[in-house]
Image 1: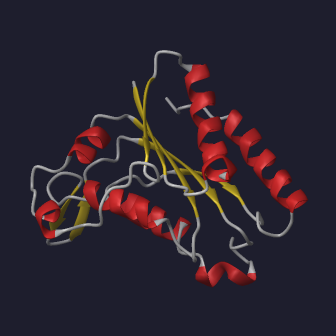
Image 2: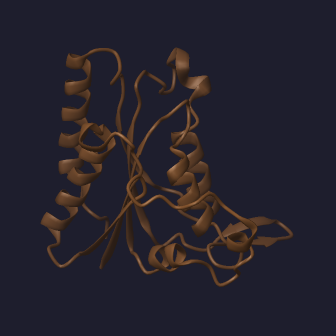
Image 3: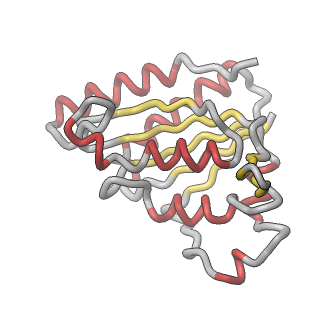
Length: 189
């Protein structure tokens, strides 16, 4: 089994999403030591923004091949200015390829990669969940759910750490709770 870990936080060692994504990978590899892990750090090895030459490559990109070859995807993302980091968007632009990960039909688009399990480590400075005052401007989790669903991944697992910018104690508790939750994960059969 192949696992692709994608980290996109620009905060390095101070990143909550990186701590959570690492805990997810650790839990999954502890449960199955035979898992082959490939890591892509989009902050230190950033992809350029989408250009026509990349968009016009029907066979796809190396990033698409890496994604398609993976059975499990772990995505680490902080919510910046209400959405995902632009580095992660550039990666998604390389895996959302008509004819490869989705196709258009008269009835609407059809996702082609629903056989993958996706875990998302998402961190947010405030509280943006359902019922929270900031929920209307939360476009990280909602975007990721929509784009993953578009390519056929309809049941991603999200591990959230919220309120990280409130104060140090709230941050520490939120990250610890998310890391503990990640430690209990397994790949469903």
